[in-house]
Image 1: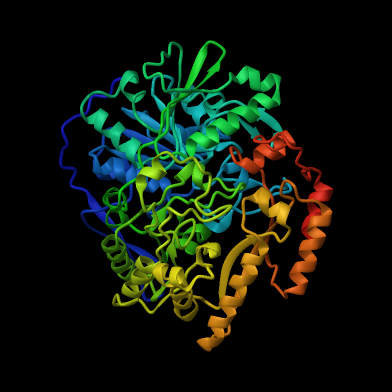
Image 2: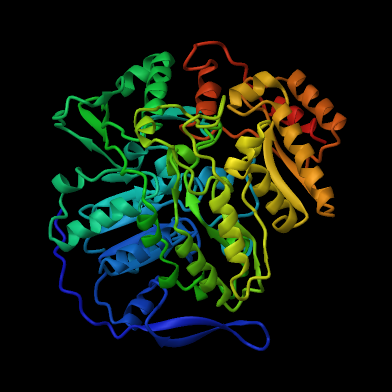
Length: 606
């Protein structure tokens, strides 16, 4: 597996810039400098390329924007000097001409199901097929297969067996180890087994992809060197532990023999993944060993700024989709800006920490404001920024007061069951960012679309309140950044269900509820608070849903933001759903599994 990297040559590339006509129809104007990454042979010819270094295959439509992972990776590799093409939503049901039209890349195929797990994208919580797809032009379903990463990878390995395949994205990331698969109701090995891919890149992949690009440029892209890259998972037929610090999981065959062995492995993995400094994890599969390299350290602000890449992107869907209709996911996020990544909330049903990391990486204020200015220059921008956020809206720049304690900590949450004394939950930097963003020319309004972690804003101590700016932050949001409704996520009302969810007591939500309406009244605002609730979660019975319904009615809450629990790979809640008991305590956990009971639980919302 060698990829010689030629010296960079001038390509005389033109730029495709989207402009609005008088009829408000998107047109394309060609000027020097930038361009969409090519998706067809015709576009390769236009660029004067007679070869491609990397082909990225995705289950999403191609949107050249920082919120779409394949665009970020493509632009990053391009910046490193590689020629990158994107193959969005290739047809897997015909003669596979889409997989052949660009030829074979000189270095590797990168494959992702897209911004969502393809099965979550396709099916409801009740395993019913969806009729739409927000990541496809025209909101049309049917443009990607089930288990898209596996299907794409198998096709590529059949057509081009000598070309390395690297899989990534949330679908691969959350299936990197053995896992329960809800949709087939089966226990599956690492997705590397079914896909036949050479490597899996988990988490947010800019750093490992940058390292791969550097190996290519230095003519060092081979198996021995790739296997040393952090955040890589691969199979080895002759792995030897040279560190004596490896975490060894029980073999996959043992997990198949006894589910308690999987329970033991799950706990070991979850605790390891919560650490700031992690070990290599290995697991035997017959005569081969799955090797899970530890992740890169949490990105610094400078590193995350460097990966923002907004100035290098077209900030638009590829023009090929103009006649097919809008891409709902793009329409939803095109006026929003991501300011940090990661989440230390630790909710048992959530995959964010296992994918993005528990520790927060934040962009600098300067970088965010630059992107705000860039956004105001887009032809579609009308002055309303719909979100300055991330997985949780109010974790920006939050770290440990003393990082040495974080280095040895393996708590799944920094705020549950209680807020860690070492957590710096200062909201003033976020307040300052909101105010400076509001002052950027062209910005008329900023609303917060990400969910606010309300339990971090609660305290009965006035000194703590002022120290961290808790009431000051909530009042700023209430006064200036709510578009009539604010979303928060209590998820349930019953104590033992909330405990299983790793969520705070419902009394905390009611305290926040009172604070929100008190501040709304003080500032003469008529606004709604919209709580999110989940039915069918492990440890939740029909009686618990009945109690939730009573609590909602008693407190006159709005229940339009509701969902049924979907078991997604590698989460604590999914482990309980599969096992029927808590993997840490082996205490039996009731789970609603029949379609009838899941629907019956959900009906209590209405």
